[in-house]
Image 1 (spheres, rainbow, N blue to C red):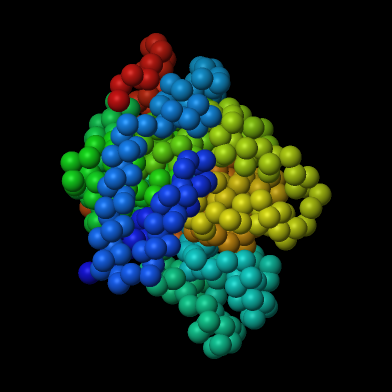
Image 2: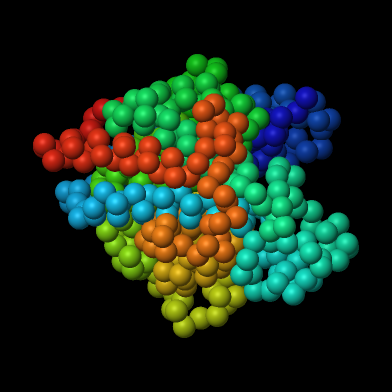
Length: 456
């Protein structure tokens, strides 16, 4: 039985790409990979595993010391501001924003869910086939010709349940499961949790085949006794993909106006499965979500959040490229063409291209919920993850009471999940539980500083 993301030959193929993108030596393994493709599959897998094993031994003697893209928290934070946490929200306002984040994330995820994996040309062809271009509502197959439905099938996992005519709640999705699991971690361990607590929560609550790419590799590394950060680095060519980025939200939710703490919590989580830009993606969006409680202008949010990741990293440079574009004066399709030109070589679930797309959609949407999530999903790549992140941010800015009923009412205040204790949960309850954790930290902050930087 071959399990995706654990196949040594597949790992070696993506390791070549990963090392090329991060600026490491890759030619020797690229040549070896080409040679393996001419051999019987079983032999090729055995030899690929041997190559990867030797590569890991070599990496042990030369760990990541790349000064522009460090993995260590203190090194990442060298240029980050150390401003004290602050917000002037009443408890009612804070709850409204938290509920807005949960609902906004769910609706944005649901919008992108049925078409995950389909790229821009396919999305446009689908929408034009039943006169729904440009996207302005949940997907529907009503009026969509059979040849289109056959050519572009809905996502296998709960794609049909995510169509406009079938929605009766938020169906299960890993983009929401991680947020709920992180809520569980906070309820159990509080702000003092460490990376091992997160790892234990994964192994206890997440089925092995319901985690993907970097998380699946890390999951099996953990079972093999490899703790963080080795769980992220050992034979894990997906270590800069989007998996950590989709886990950022809860850390921002529980740290309103405190991006320093939010990014630390994100780092503790990300290092289990990711390195470099994979870590920065989670830290960047955790900072941005934290700041969304006290700042409503997208450009200011993005520029401020950018100060919490290394300025010379590929992630920071990609976001800088978006900030330099005159997006407000451009047609959205032209923006997406530029994104393809700059970032189209990345895998469709890499952290960098998807972060750039989400940032561009936030700028183009100018705080409008519908415009932001629809533009995000029409950009393709990881449609449900990006829709979720963009929806979460605008949901916080606007608050639940100001989110359009067109997007929120179909959720029926309910989410399905295979996580113990979370199936059929109400979003209102999730927001109240999040508020309880936030209150706890606010009380600590009011009695003195809370430096947790060495508590790993």
